[in-house]
Length: 135
Image 1 (tube, rainbow, N blue to C red):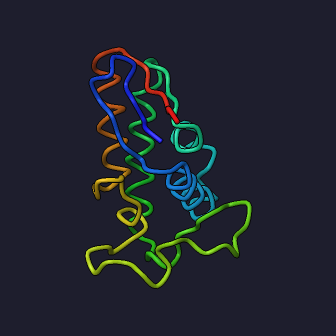
Image 2: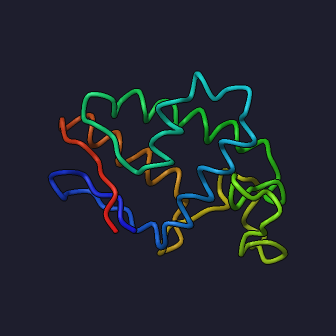
């Protein structure tokens, strides 16, 4: 799965759709009490799509999500919000560099996924282009 700016200048190789689902699931479950105020950010994590008009606010919300998830240990991450008993592939297999749920989930090339998504949304806002998920 790839998250791509409409002008194709920014691309995030998410890997499989399970990767984005795990990030969404983790934020959705762990930040339960903040779902309403983070609705744009959560919707982006769920779909991978964002209009140019909402990109700036969505980036702000993803930054808040990242900050909030940094207070949760990697062991608290959720693989699938629909089946909380399902274990993620990272269970008992995390690098010592991973200190929280904010930096647990990475792109296919090992970059922190939330950081890459925020950067892509900022680019989209600055250049008035949408962002969409492919694959």
